[in-house]
Length: 211
Image (tube, rainbow, N blue to C red; front, side, top):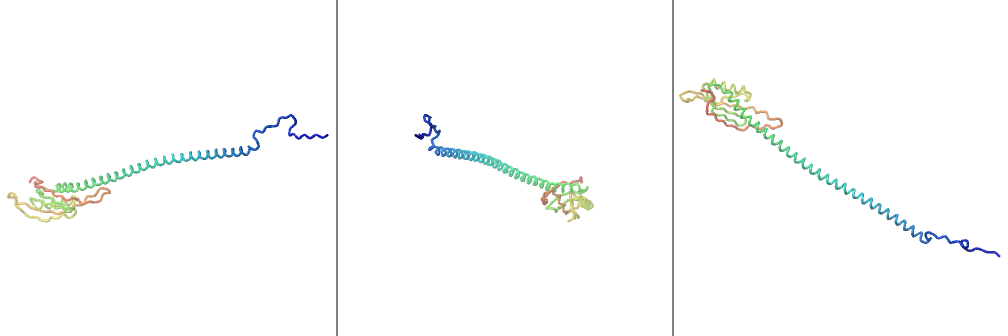
């Protein structure tokens, strides 16, 4: 008689237990893929979040620096405007000083040119034109005065005698005269435009000599 063993295992052996049933293996694989995908998405989101925070921090720093640069630019503009204003004021002061030196220099030159026996009664200036009126003991004193004015370098040549006449003052005959001259314009300070000399009117009633 032939016997056939139809059992998978030997008789009396304990059947091998599977760790995961075969029908659940596909579910486990799907779950693993889902977890891996979730972790990947979480890591990507975290990277994007960190990068966004870094970019926002750089934007904030850039805005802060931009605001600082704008304030610095405003300060530079303010300082430039103040510098230009100060330069304009200094130029005005130099111009005024130059204009004041003209009449002072003219009066000093005319005063030094007065010879003995001559005194001045009036000095008038309108721009470069100067007229000097006075009295003298003689025509020689008048011509000496004119010559001194010409060699002073302050007046253009020639210095002209406009009028001469005689008159009596306290029983003394004197020469009344009027002289016309043109002042040489003073050299302006460097970088400043030439400005005309202001009009001046000086009256000198007392004689400059001990006549």
